[in-house]
Length: 596
Image (cartoon, rainbow, N blue to C red; front, side, top):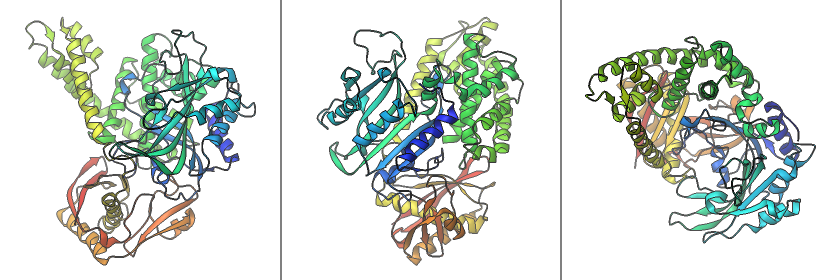
């Protein structure tokens, strides 16, 4: 088995699939465009949904990429050996081209061939969908693995819970998958231990999804007219396997980052269980924050949406930096180590390095003030409990409002001769999580594949509105995010101040003039240089590669885009801005509707 560095595996993967006729496409932004279902790009398939649904991709039917992703559901678990908030997903895609036979054969070749990864075949295990009332057992995938040379005893049929992907929302493309696991060498936890077990013996390294069904609103499944392959291999996790280390934090991906923390704190990574956890949390959270801040659609810390998650990451890192007694305003040095490690592949980090470090310093200063307020709150409440015990609700408020971890509250309570209702704190915390999850689930109702007429019209309106904003406010206006449901559009854009009433009215007027003109909406596929020269606005190369789609609406708008659109501007109705507000530092937000 080859022991590869992170940069080497990333390039090797792309080279392998390029040799199989795939076009290498760039990573899309971490901030999804016109996707109401998620705050961040959480998988390689998110930016490709229109093409998985049948729209033609400018780069063809075979694609490969390294997609930067953020998943924040387990922030509080970061610090153990496996959880990270930021990760890179290696992917290869078939958009109605090859299917199970080729996908499985190429996965096997890349993993086991001495020319590529050279993993011992006997240490690989596989799972396939066992079948149910919605779809039959996936014997095709099972039999193909056997043809490749896999011992049938290494293949397990599992239920939909384990071997079915999607849909991302209530409806949309989905299908069985086959997952690939590496045997870590640990003892089985029981005679029934298999890759579905969470004991740690089997580590998932690759997942091949076969999108061959479309789930309908009434819960029925119908065959997709275009069958797709969507694969994902976690870069950090696979490197950890190849390097034979116990966690992703022990790979070269984190070497320089951990070294920076050690230098700043004067402590060693593995001095104790406490330092291991603190080092890992700081390394992961600042790596993630650096990528969010450095993204071309990058947000800044705030109290809403992506900005809230970013603030939470930075402040949790600050708390653990304080625990390690790192100097104030030192997290920007950790970010510089991240930029040094990843900047050659993700050049936006270098381009936006000043913004990254400035925002980290600014947020650290803000948090110091918040901590002071939290200490004042603690001093206020500590005298209000007759039994010298801080109740769970108050402890949770210190955590949620002032950023105090429960350990911080316990320490201060001990110093003041108090105890804390820890069980009550955890109950309040769990209740908060349930509410958060319930709120998050509402974001998925439309599904990633929601390209209905209402959505298409609102998406088209964002083009006209951005063009109008640039006329009213100046060409410095650029899109920073977009969220569209069937009812309304939400559009974030770069601008330093609140818009005046007159500016809002003028923007509405310009958009409605374009709608009343009823011009056709023309789509062209152009080389990226041609698109740029034609005057189209957009994040060139952000996710389309060498060729891009340019949508032109008469003289009103010309923009690079991959989303759904109306066929004429006259289909939109009347455009109305409902609200204009701050989103984060230097970014404003507009909510608008179309009235038929």
